[in-house]
View 1 (cartoon, rainbow, N blue to C red):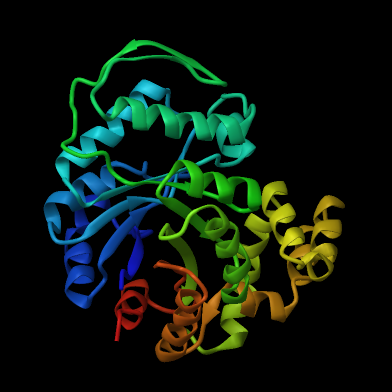
View 2: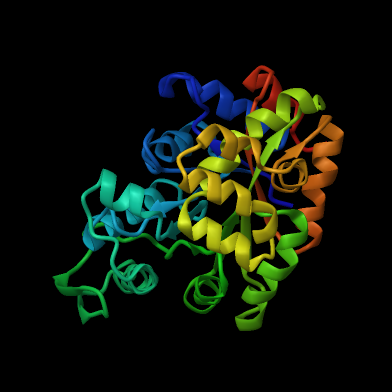
Length: 318
């Protein structure tokens, strides 16, 4: 079974991460998946990993659909696939207005259609054919890739609610999901399977192998609040039925009382959305995600109250 971990590791210089990646492969992690927000970009850590650890799969979780033009996106995807042939999976998603517009000065217009159009364009262009096509949200005139991979890498689409999840199954090879409980996976995977079976479902699972609730829960609340106050994540959790448990968080956050808002997140929600406990308890909890439909668990390690490298080692597959 694939067993992935999120890179690069925070607080470690990128050139110094080689031995971390090599050890992950030795410990049994099969995949290294990058993220992209305001730290390292999604591609460079994977490019380094492609030569440092030639026996692992590489993926992006995720690259925003808006922050690179279509041609540059195709070049980046093609380059990494050529660097790691047959080992690269490209994950793309809408991202959020904060990252797209406030940080990158790009209008966050028609996110569903734009992401779908980028997937369609990538499939067209990565074949090496000349692209002359008007998509719904942009038009390409006379583009042809100068570096063509032997095969088009699998493309996955990040999704939260039914529209994006079904589009991921219809247009791509699967979906990327995150910030949900193991029980929530059943509903989310059901949306994907309504459209197509055999699709990959990558889930970023936030994990802390520390059994002390006095350490984990307060820190986890800050991580949860940072995401679940973003409108798309708030609507996601309303759809999942978690609205009544989180309404106080949203009300206090909107009123500007951030401290009280964070404190208002119930223990029950923390325990649902963040996997924590002893390493064996964490592995057992991760297995529930897989049993409910996740094909690739991707650990995002939260080393609350502990050493990051020790946490990575302790969470390795048994």
